[in-house]
Image (tube, rainbow, N blue to C red):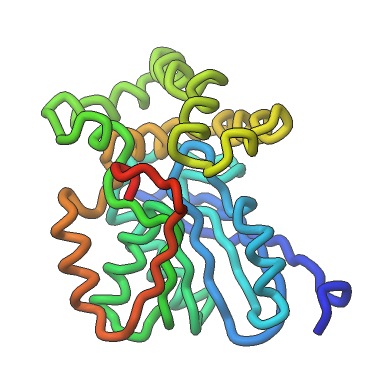
Length: 252
């Protein structure tokens, strides 16, 4: 089936976190065996970043990209997001939304995918990791997890002050620096138009609660590299890992 005959299907799935309902965005494209695509957990990432990849794969697979709860562009409630939420959401997807023959995970999503595959072999099909990471930005910068990091996420939940504190960490200058430093291979990719789109992601209602927890490492499923490598070793079939040629060593 040619691309000209295919169309996108945009929808949402309903989910509940800590008793609070929310909607999570889904994008479907293509025809064939089912493939699940998971974007990175990031202050500026959404499923839309996978759109070009879906176009390429759509002639061979029925692809589904999905935002993570607490991320994306839709409003979300105030939740003290934790790794258990994301493990539970991935199980929800493969039990209720899609039965993937292939699952692609970007960035921090890799750890959650590997954990699911190791504990429930075959549940997510064949695995592909795109620029996998296991440690949030601040623990990576500090090369460790000092005690104050555990206290930081609570600050962003405070009324008024929390929003100000969050904006200090996702302003125009910092997003440019982040994009050029370790997110995008080409420093010229983040044009003014694309930067404006990234800023919109950070301004979605309730965005600060998951975003800042990711930055502080509160959403890290693994606390050291050995943990994620051990999980990888418990997966019996091959795992495709793709990284950028110029990916910084600390981002691997």
